Amino acid sequence: MAEMIESDPHIHVDRKVLQAGADFRNVLASMLGRAPDAPSEVTTGCGLKVPYAMTSPHPERVTCLPCREHAHREHLNFADQVERLGRHPGTALPADRTAEAAQWARDRAQKFASG
Image (cartoon, rainbow, N blue to C red):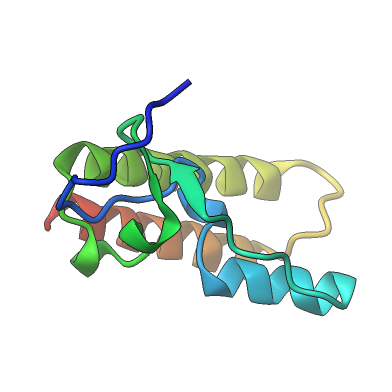
C-alpha cells in the first residue's frame, strides 16, 4: 500500500488516469443519475498516495515526470484497445467514432509525453 505523502510539491495523475476528473464523473452522472464523490486521496501513476487536490487529468498541469510517463502509456494502451474493439466483427462501435476515440487518446498521450 502506498504511503500518504503530504509535503510533495508535484502535481500527479491518478493511477486510473482515464477514469479521473470531472469529465468521467459527468459521464457516470448522466448514465446513473448521480455523480460519484471525488476521493479525498488517491494512489498516483508514480505509486504515491496523495490528496486528490494534488492531482490533475490535464497534461499541462502535471509536474511529476513518472506520472506523466504513466499517463502517456495509459492513453496509448487505451487507443490500442479501442482500435481492437472497433475491428471485431459485429461491433456496435462505428469505425469513424472508433478512429476518433483512438486519435483523441494518442493526441492526449503526446501531450503527456511532451510536457
